Amino acid sequence: MRTDEGRDFAKSLLMPGRQRPLPLVRAQPWLNRAVGFAAALDLIKVDGKTIALTPTAGEAAVKELGSQSDLMTTERFFLAEIKPFATEKNIEAAMRVERGLWA
Image 1 (cartoon, rainbow, N blue to C red):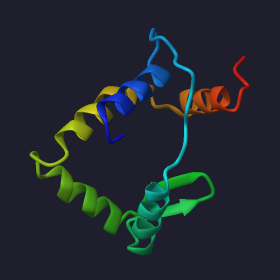
Image 2 (image 1 turned 180 degrees about the vertical axis):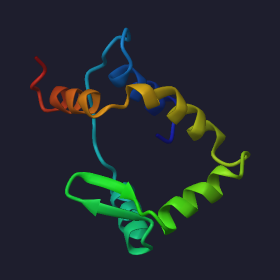
Image 3 (image 1 turned 30 degrees about the vertical axis):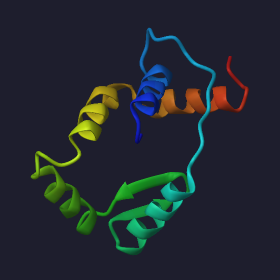
C-alpha cells in the first residue's frame, strides 16, 4: 500500500466495524515484477496462490530490514495495525466482494 488512501481502503476491507467501500482489488504490474525478482533472488517461494519467505535468504533479508528501525516506518505501522485482521478468511471475503459474490 503506497498511499494513505490505499492503506485506509485495505483497513476498511479487513477490519470489523468499518464501512465497506465498493471493492477495487487489483495487482499492479510492478507487484508481479517485484515477486518475480524476489523469487529469482531466492527470497521467497511461490506455490500457486501462496507466497512465503525462504528459510535462509528470505528470513535473513527480513531480519536485516527489521534491525533498521528507521526504514519503512509507515509500512511497518500499517502492517502491524492490520495483521490481526489480514486472515485468509477476511482476504477471501474481500476477493468475493470484488468478484460480485458477496453473501
